[in-house]
Length: 306
Image (cartoon, rainbow, N blue to C red; front, side):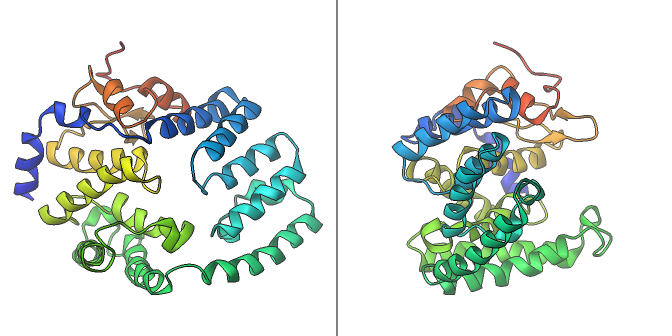
């Protein structure tokens, strides 16, 4: 862990501002649409922005978000169309929000459930089932030992949990290096079942669960994904970097302002407060003021407005 601390503290602030990529406009559009839907409640404009993304970029993960917006506008026909598209792209009907079912008639819900079984079968015929099994082999014990009632919970730093998290990240790294041409798992391989990979990377990376080799490897891969794909976007990268930044500084200071103290409903302090908005913009994130509005929280105490 000391090596990680030394490595990270030696990185200059300019390192984080050098990330520029072709997908930056896509990320901005997506964040703007989220802002319109969440803060402004302008659902029509948000749908227009999402549809612009669908038209200009080859992405298949926005259908569920669009369906929810159509339900806000009480356009159930359009909502059902996009829910079916989401299911065909690997979305699990069990993960649908309660508001989905409460907005649909019993007949529509039953039709959707029946359709989901058909689409689920077709989806599993397209994915890399070998990788799917590996991911869930890592992920299931990961989740089990992450539960609050196991070994005194996360704060107890349960040694078995630490070992499992670290071993799973190592197994994932070795798979990427040796079996997947150096690429993180992609939607073409797992569809929306990619989420367990993100949980392992983004929620279980702390000082007790990641070593120097794994951290350096996954930071580089997530940075590459910012420019080469859409599977792991700027929010994922910011969370991963800020996870480790808060660990190494021990003062809860972060680069991109991802993490929030939910007890005080305030974003944790920043390492480079005068540069945070330009750093966020460099990877396609909206400024921290609008991020705070989306999350309905206060800005960091050391935030410097430009």
